[in-house]
Length: 320
Image (cartoon, rainbow, N blue to C red; front, side, top):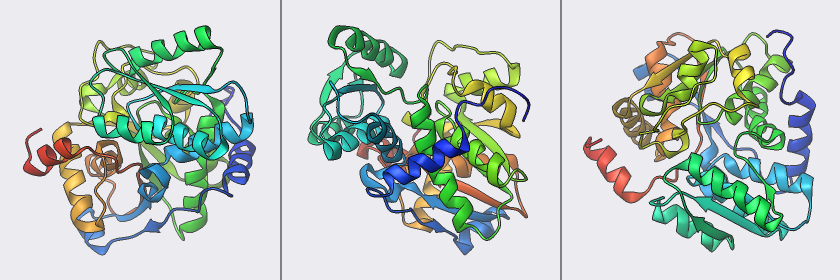
């Protein structure tokens, strides 16, 4: 994967797992015969929806706050799951948490963040503007920034899910990872290049929020004016300096899928697995289908299951 400086070490992932083990049990890695028949692959489904807060982001929040310990408090920007993960970790470790969300964010996710005891600040038109609010609060209040992507401890926390996959899978040929900022994908690449360098990692992003996909193919960071997708976890307008070089060095391929394709994957996973993933949690299956990875053992991640009721209704009715 070249001589570039990698953003984290495999040892960082192992250290993160040691810190979060007290709080989080390993999540299931399941197979479903009907899913295998429909895709032509042997699909390993990593159920990150079984974590507290319903997503893998609980790992990330814990990985950061268990390393930092008590302090003046932390602040994060989010569309939902990252904020929930940080708020949940803060509630367990008695660390004050402030969460910045854009205006018009999911009311259900906002309410869940508040219920965990975090202060919620609603400002900006999208995730990237919520990041600017976060950085203003860092300056005004002296809080520590927990960026959802540009934080090595976050990437190490995300890597723990792939470490579990490697231990749980009897065979693994490839992973298809949804990319919003890239923490999950770079965490996977970090683990696999240390333990299973033969495993190929593929990225998938929403076609309406394709900044990192486009940057990867251009081999240069690009910014887009909007990020239009119902998959909140993929709705970013730019690449990120800590993850982008590693994505360029490590991904085998990178594709986009439409909201209609993500919706079809969501309905398939809901029907077969009994889990109702959010859009980002279904994107891995949509990417697997788009890539045509038949006759291989492929891991996908139901990264979260926090879809709001109105969005789910539109997906189930096919009105995207």
